[in-house]
Amino acid sequence: MSELQAALLAIGFGVIVAVYVFGWWQQRKYRRKFGAAFKANHADALYRENAATAEERMPQFAGATEDAAVEHAAEALVEHPARNLPGEPCALLDVRCDFIIELHLEEPSPAAVLDGLWQRKFDFGKPVHVCGLTLAGKVAAQQWERVIAESQTLYARFRIALQLVDRGGAISAAKLADFRDLVLGVVKPFKADTAVPDVHEAHQRAIELDAFCAEVDQMVGINLVPPGDRLLAGAKIAQAAALCGMTLEADGAFHLLDAHGHSLFGLANQDTKPFRRHTLEAFSTAGVTLLLDVPCAEKPAGQFGEMVRVAHDLARELQANMVDDHRVVLTDPALAIIREQIAQVEAKMCGNGIVPGSAQARRLFA
Image (cartoon, rainbow, N blue to C red; front, side, top):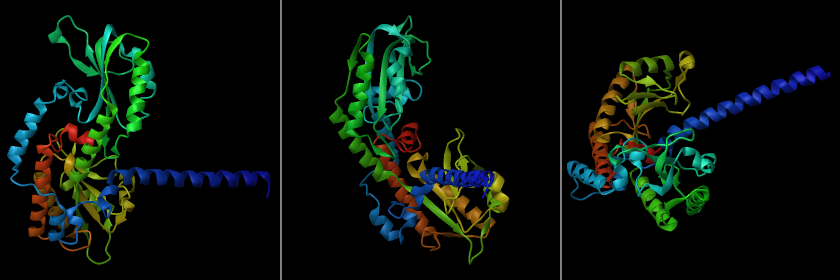
C-alpha cells in the first residue's frame, strides 16, 4: 500500500469516527431532554401496571384544595423579601432556592470589580446569578438588575447567588464552600460589608428542597402506537402535529407552545431519536409519545386534559391507539384518575410556594 493510499484510508476512517461521535452526542443531548420519561423507575402513573397501583404510589394530601393552595403560595411570596426584586433572574432569588452572598460596597463600582468571579462562573455545576443594585439619586429610583461582566453601570450592592437545586440534584457542601471562598477572595481587593450564609445550613436546605422536588417531579406520557407492525411516517406525524397547533422545536420534538413560547406539552419519538425537518420524508417510527412535564406546566391538571384531547386527535389522524407503557389501551376512567393525581401534585407544589409552570419552577426543574 502506497503512502497516499494509507493517508486516504486514515482520513476516511477519521471522517467515519467523527460522524459517529457527532451522532452519539446528538442522541445524548436528546436523551437528557426526554430520557427521563422512559425510565422504569419514573413515578409516572401512565407507565404503571394499572391505575390502582399508580394511586398507591402517588402522595396523598388530606384536606388540600387547589384554590387554598394557590392562596397559600401567594402568602409565601410575601414572606421572602428576596423574591420581590423586579425582573428576572433577580426577582427569583430566594434563600430557600439559592445560596446568596450580599456585598454592600463602600464605593459604587462596575461589574469589573468581580473579575475573578466571571472566570469561574460555570465551575459549580449549578447556575450562578449576579444581581446589582443600581446607583441612583433617589433611593426609590434604585433597582436590582442582572449584572454581566461587561456592564459599566455603577452598583451600590451586589447579590451573588448559587442555585441550590436543579434536576441534577442538590448542590454539594464542598461546592458551596468553594463558591463562598471564591466570592470572599474576589472581594478582598476592595472594601465591602459582606453577608455570607452558613454553608451547612444552606446545604441542609438544598437536601430538603431536592427531596421535595424529587417527590413532585412527574413526567406523564401517552403513547400513540399503530396496530400490528405498521410504522408511522415522519411526514404524516408532522402533518398531524401541525393540525393540532404543534411545531417542531430545536430539541427534536413537536411542542404546543403558550403565548410566552413555553412548552405546554411535547410529542417525542418513542425511541428518543429526534425529529429533524430535513429527514422527515424518510423517517418512520413504531410509535410516538405525548409528554407533560408536570412541574414545568402552568396548571398541569388542566394541561393534561388538553393533552388527552390532542392525543385523541392525533390517534385519529395517525390511525393509532392510545396506550400505556405496557400497550394497554387507556380508558377514560383511567385518564380521569391520572388527572386527579396530577391535581394533587399541583396542589402540593402551590402549597410549598412553587407554582407549577412559574419561572421559579422552570429553573428548579431544568
